Image (cartoon, rainbow over all chains, first blue to last red; front, side):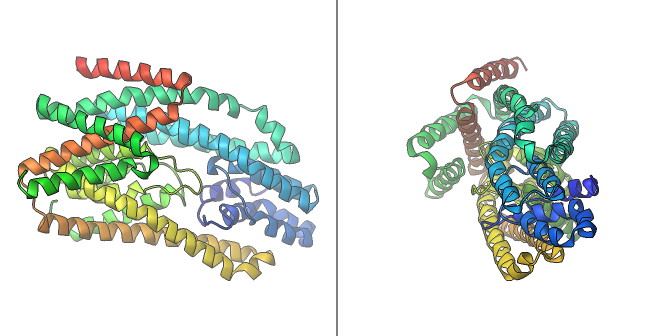
Length: 244
Length: 226
């Protein structure tokens, strides 16, 4: 796979031109360029068509984009009909989006952030932050290398390569870990902040938390946590200004 | 808010641009997480403790957000940088609430600015549609560099504007001690409500909910024993 490492580095910026028309499309085209370089000398016409296809609409979780990139690049070298490659790209959007989002945004990130919060409030300071960054990026970069290689090796059979890979199993396992880590962090973080305010302050803050949870449930998405916080702060300042 | 030297302001603006870029464009290395952005901003502003206090609390709000695809979400990176600078130099019990308030407004503005940049990206693509249809790799590269530059400029502008707004808030909205402490308690309560809501939603009704409950129990025990 010529240009693999350059493609890998470019994949880090796969969302650099994110937009509502092509979504990751242009970023995928940018990352595909080094992979398609050899095609330019072998078949310049095919290369031009491949470049056009590589920058068309595409969307998925950025950490798994390498699977689609590798698979479509391999398909271009194997002279698979263009319409079939376009169908493969379209077919990969949903599974790579769902699996990647579950693995990274719903699982790994909350799990590691929860652990980092626990370590921070227990006094680890910079080590907590450096550990979080090192662990997340090691997993994420390792996944990116695996994804690009697996995609390129599998080509048009990338779907079965994904379904038999470690990804679905990891998705099932990381969720409970994330739940446990966030659950562990919340009381420790609350204690870290509220210890200095005495019982009355702590009860006041927990009452705000309770009201926030209740009204968010009552009003649904129209009253987000950010809106509730800003509303509560504005009310506090207003009542203090008018002397209540 | 401590008086910041010009070079510190410049470094904070650069850091704000970096964390704004990190959220979506490049490299998504989690530099934009409030915990990371806040600690580094606190260090740049000369008060790591304030940066950590701001970062941990905003992290609770950020855990309520899933940054998935086209979903609109607040951008906590530059907001955390500004909040850490605002909280620096004051006892955290007094400065935290106001800083979080400013950060939340900036985070919402940051989310809107992200939509604006995405629309600009779409317009740039439309302008180069013919080159893209002709398979010109150079056009793809220019679009990519343009998108990244626009996002960096967004982050820098958001951070610089936020620092200016924070300075104005401190100057024109003086708070007495009770109000400042009250704001901090409201900020803590709201953050706890946000993270609890997000955690329960993500947990659903399966095994993750059991693990969440077990984590909560263990965390409560640890917090009481400490």
